[in-house]
Amino acid sequence: MALTRQKKEDIVSKVSDLLADSKLTVVAKYTGTTVKNIQALRDQAEENDTNIKVIKNRLIIKALASNDKFKNIDTSEIKGQLLYAFNPSDEVAPAKDLATFAKLNPTIEFVGAISSDGLFISAEDVKALSQLPTKDQLRAQLVGTISAPLNGFVNVLAGNIRGVYNVLNARADAINN
Image: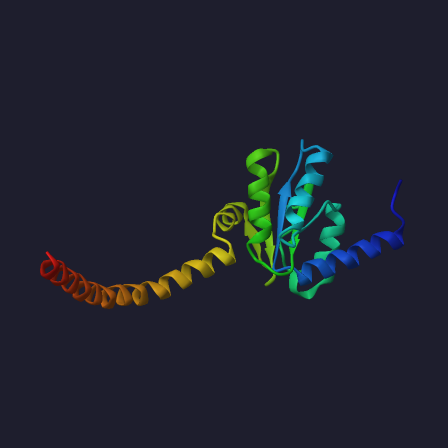
């Protein structure tokens, strides 16, 4: 059933809002992917606050044109069966979600991404983004890096105390034997 003009305008408005709110919108081909697998992708991505949508390309192009920030994006890559992954809170999550899913379902293929700054990012750059650690992993690495010198200093101080303790124990054993 064809969409009415009003429904199309509503979709363009919702997509325009999603694009404006999303830190990164990843565009991927899904030709050959079953509906069941697309639903599994949606469920998996939802855990990271990523919203997966299959939207007609011309409605996406209209949504891009309706927003001043995205007016100058080259839309030549937006063709064929595409899905869009939106995430309002994380720049890397949509790329990671699709890359993780694509390992088991090679029918998912990156086309590119649209940044919150209004830039179109190439598929190679999106692949590189998908290999970055998550924010939580980066935070853990930062904490480990900051705490490493302190841990070393504490171990040095503890080594001196351990040395005195071992000498005193050795003396006590020598006196008792």
